[in-house]
Length: 323
Ligand code: BDR
Ligand code: CA
Image (cartoon, rainbow, N blue to C red; front, side, top):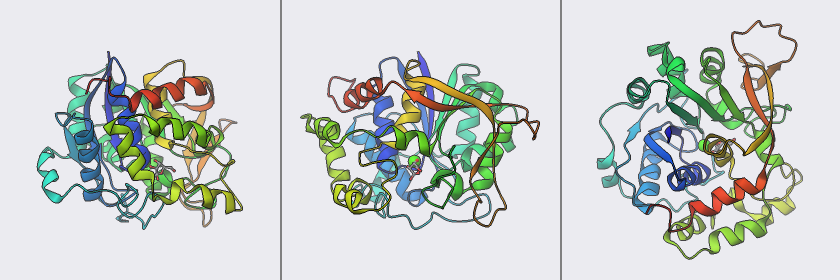
């Protein structure tokens, strides 16, 4: 059995990643912790609860966490997935928040990891603020995790939110720095470059949402007016990441956690985060010549079996999966 903790800033792609995990046979989600990011913390909590409601899985505990970065920056104005994170289609009202656990996300991460020491993997698909706070409160947390999977950072110097920094890292660079310093457990990272290089054809996306289920309908709805999924915009943009297509960014980190044969090649290296550069703050820096003498290395995803990924995405929207 794969025991999972998931930390999210629930936008459209986090929602998909959660759905992939919910549908995976043999995976058990012990808790979902929320962090600000794609939208405000309150919206993130609502979005996670809306996803669990659509999937009939509201017994999974959801915890509210950091609402600002370690230095106090609130959620950036980010229209990539619409103001509400779900493409303007987040329709849960405030009463859904009654389903939230009372415990703070950071306490929950530490408690659950301690209860299942050595057995639980953490998948982080938002800014790393909750993780950084948790390791400061319990420096032994990384030893209790089996593995850590992250969507964030970049390998080739190309960013999205900034010239050369990826959103999850640049929204809270100090948190990303702390995580890359202190999480000495095996850490696997789906960088921005990697996910863009492995975008899927729109034809596949059409098949995906054509499935006749409540879950497919939900995904279709939340992407319908979402800037991130505008094919017209992609075609007219000068720089289309790495070619037109559809990328469910956070699902790549989730796929690596669920399916060991998904990633076929990793780059194992030391990595850190630039904190003071005028143009480079938040950029992931690879130390390929071991100058920083860091304690541990990370595994950066390089090549993958895209057919396995498609299968996981498809299965996530089928009804048969434990509804
Ligand atoms: C990452 O930033 C967020 O907008 C997405 O949900 C994803 O986690 C991509 O850079
Ligand atoms: Ca995310």
